[in-house]
Image (cartoon, rainbow, N blue to C red; front, top):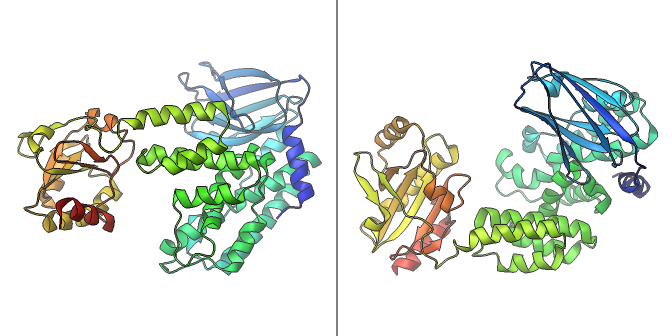
Length: 449
């Protein structure tokens, strides 16, 4: 963990306003795409600047009124981290297809930005999640030490070097905060519970400091660390949003950090799950989140999900052809419960649920429940082949590119399961998956079994 003094230095550097100087950025792009602009996202405010690139590959912008800070640059599919200073002009040259690999710099800010693109910087990765704790801690520490050596060898200004050592901490150990979640799978250890040594290390590299929220690496690292902390002392690993938010409410004293975390946790929960089980979370959101833009964004999300609350009429009907070309409508199925699976043949998690779905269909055959699978495959032939080859049961329908039903249910990712009652009213707009034991429990409750 960096010293408190270092963290305070960074916080001061990220919050001290620089007088109205102007940084001129010049872009020279090989193989430019005139339809695409360079997008610069400033880490402190989240503000974005766009730079048009002409047919010759030239573009420029003059930026005033900002402090020296990290900025994310995006062009076509490429992204990379820059460091901009209002007192320093910078010329950036790159090929549009390989921006993240081959950017070269000229000007006063060239040395820092050349360093930031160094291929020598390393971090823990997903494959490391299978390692044992002691080995993972040792590797993380070794990588961080090497990264700091790369930084020192660059001989950059002292104020930047102090900031960068802290940014490197969260860059290097990013996956360490995910270890408690990922190791049971990658390490093939379903009974894994983090040890005291793991939590001690995680605490050492997780300062709670609002000044660090200007670092995107800190904001990416922190939620997973909090999720792990919320599970400390428990004999069964879990990471529910409610558990995390209650932990934040009870333990995080820095109001800005608590606001950031609760905004992120609660917004993501409602965005993915809706409002049916969110009442307690919303209370804590209202308690901690004071930023006007965040509140407006969350309120807009809640308004969209309001129509999908349990008890409301279905947000949309469907009427799609089965494999034989016969059209089946939702109104044809009233009188029984309807368990809807929105899926596609190319979706791995969707296919992963098929065995459990088949078991449910067999278990509840002849009961008052329809199993309806709505395929969003663009390739109808691929859908037909899988239905036939896998001998898929239930009511198999192809909706293809018609997003009417998906949009009404705010479906942005699949698989997605929906449960309707006998009258076509919503029981759950985001029902548990077939593989979840709670699904059969709910069916038994509804059917009186």
